[in-house]
Structures are given as C-alpha cells and as structure tokens.
Length: 256
Image 1 (cartoon, rainbow, N blue to C red):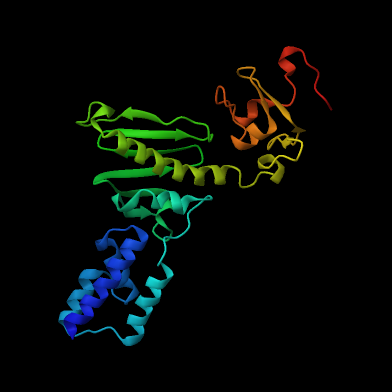
Image 2 (cartoon, one colour; image 1 turned 180 degrees about the vertical axis):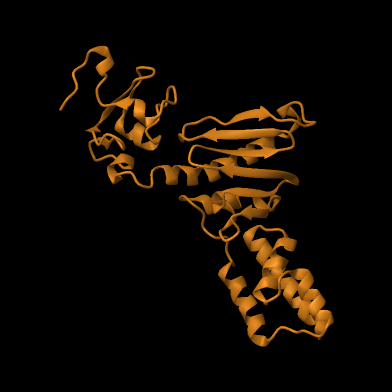
C-alpha cells in the first residue's frame, strides 16, 4: 500500500508536469511542498520513517491537477495556443520569481528540443540564449530578431538546425508580448486603439491625428501603424519621443 501511495503521487506529478510543460523533477518538488514537506527528498525520507499523506492531502493534489489540467493562459491573446504549438520539445526547468507561471517570470530556464536555453526580458528588449548564441528582440513589435555570438564553442549560428532557430524565435516573440503589454499599460486607450477615422492619440504628448511623422528619417505613418508598433517608426525604429503630428523641422507649422 505504501508503494501505491508513492506511485500515486508520482503519477499525479507526471500529469501535472505534462500539463504545465515542466520537468518531472521540478513538479515533484512542487508536490512535496503541497504535502507539507520541504522538498521531494524530504518527502521520501519521511516516507521511510512511516509518514503517509492523509486522504485530505491526496485530495489537495488531485485538486491541484484539476487546476492545471490545461496550460495556464499567458500574457497576450493566443499565447497559450502558440506555446502549445512548440509541443513536448519545450520544457521549463526553473524561473524567477518562482511564484508566477514560467512565461510571466523575468528569468526563465528550460530546454527546447533537448537544447538548454535561458530567456530574459525587461521593458526594452527580450532575449533567448543557448550554447554560445543569443537572439534578441527590441521593444517595437516590428523589430527584427538579431543573433550574436557569445563566448563558447559554437562559432556560427548555422551550426543550429534552422527549425530550432525558428522555434526559439517563436518562443522569444511570445515572451515579447509581455514586454509590449507592460510598455503600453499606462497609455490612454486611444494610443493603442485608433478611432474609426484612424486617428491615434500620441502616448506622450496627447495629440490626436491620423498622420504621424518621424523626426529621425522623415517617415510618414498613419495612426493605425503607430498604435500597432507602440509608437516606434517602422522605417528606422525611432522611439515615440521622435514621432510628431506635424514635421515642424521641415518648416511646417504646428497646430495649437
């Protein structure tokens, strides 16, 4: 009967690991804490000394599994489905802070197709790194992924399977959605949702217009383009501070 209890606990942990795309060993630690033990080793040692979980504790594990029967929705529309498209090749091993879902963490570690990776991000950029290479994305949604070599034995990114690079970039773009959401969190609604005439509200200067000009490259963009790219120029990547309603630098008069 004792063996059956441990088998039951491990089975629940395995199902939870599959549902949340976590390593089995990681979930064993979670399950041990749920049962009042500091870690899995502590649980097994207590088991050897005669400890057995109560029926209520086993029920709590079952409820825990029910809560996580489906992967938690992530930041941004469609993230859960996109993450699921990476299949069982994606496993999260640890993340910081610990009290959140992996993709809501600031620092994530895991394996993708058997290759270890780290995933980091803040309000300005996100990056995924693995075996001597790092791929990064800057703040605007239109940003193009950039790869650079780090110190290590991998000399060229071509040494990676192109399919792996594509999948790693997808994971990076999913994480970038959290950055996009955080950047625009305190902006006025009209800054991210133009009106029926295509007019968008500049998030810094509160100007409303359907046409916007870039001080950096003289690019001209409509309101929907600006709102969709977090007010970065899609031509040169200039930040919102360089986007104006009127190109005053060309002698145009500003409206009051």
